[in-house]
Image (cartoon, rainbow over all chains, first blue to last red; front, side, top):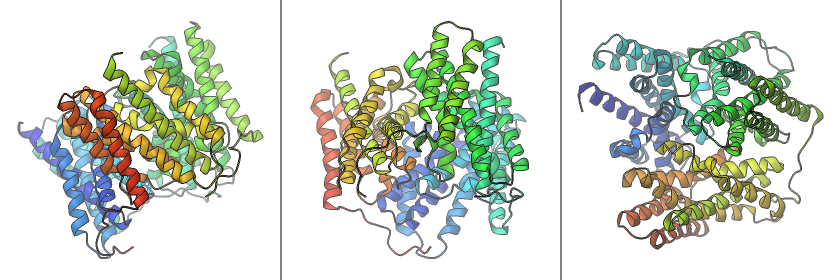
Length: 209
Length: 209
Length: 209
């Protein structure tokens, strides 16, 4: 595997790992057993990429053709099950790992979509879908309001990170020069939004119930 | 783009617009912020078509290859966010826009499925899935009971509208001669069912809990 | 259709029937009307196979190309609606039919994935996804915690049944010699886990809320 491709695989796997940890932590919070933790870790880690691959026609998804993709969420799930902190900072940890995965996936997803011939705008959107997909799967399966619909900024950092990746690739830059910075922008923005409580405007008026 | 194709694209976009408005209104009712409104509008508007395209192998979905498909739900979401009525008739508006999208999508979905080589019965079913998909996505994401499972008639008008479209296309009629009427039948039937409180029979007996 | 293929189609349909009954029973418990029962029966019966087919690139799914696949869940839904027992044993019946479908689908899903060129590990995983998918769809649509995340063993029997099927096929055994036994192992294991209350370990410590 040549340079940029290998870098993308590594970033993809780190993203899967981060999302899988976030899924495993939610499973622990919900008092699921060891298999529930593994299943939720795998679904969260692989959900976004599967959605992307199905939409761009890259089937079977890479995660099904390469056993390392399967080993990563299983390892993340086992680690979470064994070492989850029995303390009050679970939700904050979920947010950190989720933000980390968000940044990595929006970049990897956008670049893979370009690879499959999508134009810049659809590719950026696919990047955002990849980044957002795992969290939606995790939250739907555990009966939480999907994070992408909650008050803090989530879809926007993903879309901007994906757009940066598309711009870098279109400009012909080497992958290493823009992939990690773009991911960092998205993750940092997301974390700052959470920590600073940045909120987007809500609808004016009061819709009745 | 020739005549019938252009008509279908227009009907598809009107359907996306209607469903996106219904999603945006639900988001406003749930007090989501502007990005939540946009995301839910887009997911509702595009969800049914994405499901259909993935199932019939039409990937990447048209909505990813043509920027106008993306512009429609974004515009619908912005409009909803800005002009949603701060009054007690939100839920009724959701129903109207949803019924409108239902009629359009069952026809467009069935015709697209035939275009991809599906037989009449599967094509009609795909039309119903297209019509029902957006509402399911919207309701799942916001923790509502999916409309297709609630008491009023929903899947049946969609299936009948789709069957009418399949029949018209199989009979070699020009698209304009049956597409809009079939959509009107499905939408009207759905709305009448809601307004008149038509209910389908429930299971006899009382299942214990 | 030659021997092994026909056997797989039969096993697939019996699995669809079993899952569709489980979906129909849940719909009856939720007091859905006749169309809600049919829709939930169909979504539960076909959900796992659709997910598998979309992931391995077998689109349009067999269920859309062959009307018999559609007739099975409709018949199951009608039967459930008409003959559901108005007694206190609904939930137990759901579990039995669900376990039955689980065993059949993990085997059929794994073999179909191998047929489409997936390696042994991904094929076994696809078998488990097929087996687990229908129940997840059913439980998501009706607001239940997905069975795969609950305490009793569910994913493990499915994975083991799928692995047995992959091993049998790889060893060149005739389909009849391993398909039904592998399905029986998974179903029986699942049922014993429910009836005996076998539980997997939960995370140590107490995650705070």
